[in-house]
Image 1 (cartoon, rainbow, N blue to C red):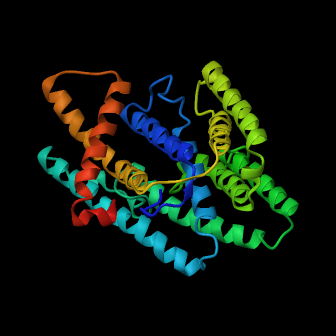
Image 2 (image 1 turned 90 degrees about the vertical axis):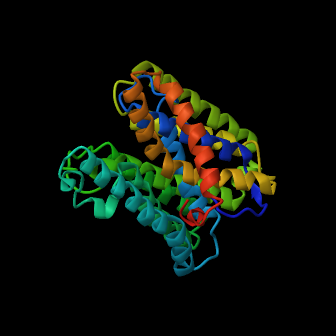
Length: 316
């Protein structure tokens, strides 16, 4: 989610995949129990992987302190601002419903934010810096050693995500361990991108990506009875590799301005979803969750476009 409007070598298809991922995330928030999910639930894994890829690759060469300051302004100030916005919403809602405000407030919100989807911002801040630091250390190893480390890390992350050891996950972020494979996958693919491997091996990577995407989709269609973390990450990884097979392009300024609205859409869409439900309940009508997701996505884009014309642009 780059905030720079300057043109730079970029992958259009990867940007488009991030928008599709966002649509799947919005649809999940509309109805978490819906089956099949709008894009088979691969949206969040896809979004997580690409976020780590950009963290590892685009900031190469910067000091960790400089990167931390930039990421703090990009991620943590919006987290603080929107935690305040959603906190005010819940306080007002409690007052209107004649309920005690503290029923909506929990200690773990100091880490996750006042609305559940805000967990992604501190996660992306810490994960991005961690993977950047790891990538910097890996550059001192031979190429084969880097890949072996990333693959071992990937296996460990999947083991934790699937909770193969049966650990108790009753702690803040415990329900977000499913996101860990994105760290190793983003590190691995980001390293391939940085080394030029993905540019030199577009056709093989496109073939591998197609196979992985197809395998993940088939598995999800046939066996989607629960979380299915491995299948979703398999499909997401496949689409990412397939996107790289299209190669990089110099992106015009207007595309960067459009793409930078993606972050704001993630922040604001839940608030607009609350507003939709209030109106729908009052009017007594319902729509399929797919149509609601498309509506919320469109309205969110419009809302972010308006917000970007105000000082609030700094936190979207």
